[in-house]
Amino acid sequence: MTGYAENATIANGFLEAGMQMITKPFAVEALATRIRDMIQS
Figure (cartoon, rainbow, N blue to C red):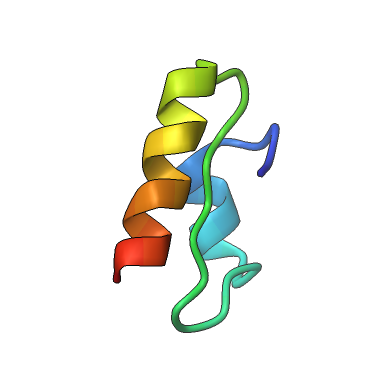
Protein backbone atom coordinates (compact mmCIF):
# COMPACT_ATOMS: atom_id res chain seq x y z
CA MET A 1 0.00 0.00 0.00
CA THR A 2 1.39 3.37 -0.91
CA GLY A 3 0.51 7.02 -0.97
CA TYR A 4 2.75 7.55 -4.00
CA ALA A 5 1.44 7.49 -7.54
CA GLU A 6 1.42 3.94 -8.92
CA ASN A 7 3.57 4.87 -11.92
CA ALA A 8 6.21 6.48 -9.70
CA THR A 9 6.36 3.45 -7.43
CA ILE A 10 6.78 1.01 -10.31
CA ALA A 11 9.31 3.23 -12.11
CA ASN A 12 11.48 3.53 -8.99
CA GLY A 13 11.72 -0.24 -8.62
CA PHE A 14 9.97 -0.55 -5.25
CA LEU A 15 8.11 -3.67 -6.38
CA GLU A 16 9.80 -6.98 -6.91
CA ALA A 17 8.44 -9.61 -9.28
CA GLY A 18 5.15 -11.04 -8.05
CA MET A 19 4.43 -8.20 -5.61
CA GLN A 20 1.07 -6.40 -5.63
CA MET A 21 0.29 -2.79 -4.81
CA ILE A 22 -2.75 -0.65 -4.09
CA THR A 23 -2.58 3.14 -3.93
CA LYS A 24 -4.22 5.26 -1.25
CA PRO A 25 -6.92 6.33 -0.89
CA PHE A 26 -8.91 3.20 -1.66
CA ALA A 27 -12.27 1.79 -0.70
CA VAL A 28 -12.31 -1.13 1.71
CA GLU A 29 -14.12 -3.13 -0.98
CA ALA A 30 -11.21 -2.53 -3.38
CA LEU A 31 -8.76 -3.82 -0.78
CA ALA A 32 -10.91 -6.89 -0.12
CA THR A 33 -11.11 -7.59 -3.85
CA ARG A 34 -7.35 -7.24 -4.27
CA ILE A 35 -6.67 -9.60 -1.35
CA ARG A 36 -9.22 -12.11 -2.65
CA ASP A 37 -7.61 -12.04 -6.10
CA MET A 38 -4.14 -12.56 -4.61
CA ILE A 39 -5.31 -15.54 -2.55
CA GLN A 40 -7.04 -17.14 -5.54
CA SER A 41 -3.98 -16.83 -7.75
